[in-house]
Image (cartoon, rainbow, N blue to C red; front, side, top):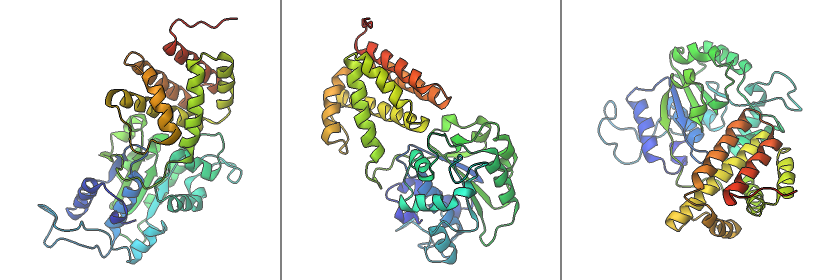
Length: 364
């Protein structure tokens, strides 16, 4: 992928290009930002630019001091290195990502076992899809993906070899917050002192969940939410909207039997979908607050979702907004730590009922 194929993010692109042309590429970098940011796309474009043998638009003279004139330098897209990068098939480009056992890979799963699915997943989704979609693509069902000790050993083994044809070997670790805590010590030394011309790019949406010893060894690069969407709204959000609307109506109406049924059903959907629903709920509560304080919503909120948020937002008040955020964030925390989902969602639902109706007490 070329930088020019990623809309927006001009300031970030400029900074990344400067590190290459000024020969200041840090060996371990963490690209972090929300799901809607182009973290992975920028990481791949950065690696492709580093190893391109015929960069375009290069400034004259040494370094890149002062302002770059005209178009930003970019990889050429046609040299042998770029062609392989465009297909995600360069022998010096390596990926690690969360995996779990599937019907095809029944034991000791590693990233390399899913490489064909990974390439297809990225190319089909224009490098802009999320973790839940990845899990669905490889069919791990209700399990949670992790970066395990087998992949940590693979990192060490892979980077111990010399590069095949490029100056830099590049190791991209996607969703590094999924690194299993007991496996992390295996890669601390190589992350801190990698072989010469080795670049680690770690990708994260939740850097506060990254193991501290990993985080401290990286240069952090914040990637803002893209102002230009490269994908339409996901099908998951449409499903989450329907579920969230039904859930909130049950809570506001204190419909205890319906909430018991809801908690039981949502508890069968799998932890990643449960977490995804809770994250969607947080975003929607935030949109309600935006509607209350600013009287407007983003342009992409329309149709039934716009109608619901407009009607629901008066019930999200300065008095209950902090508690909503606290309850939903705590629920996400406990889901990630394997709390029983049916019990968690029923407890959360009853607490939300009391946000709407402080004096509510279920009758016999």
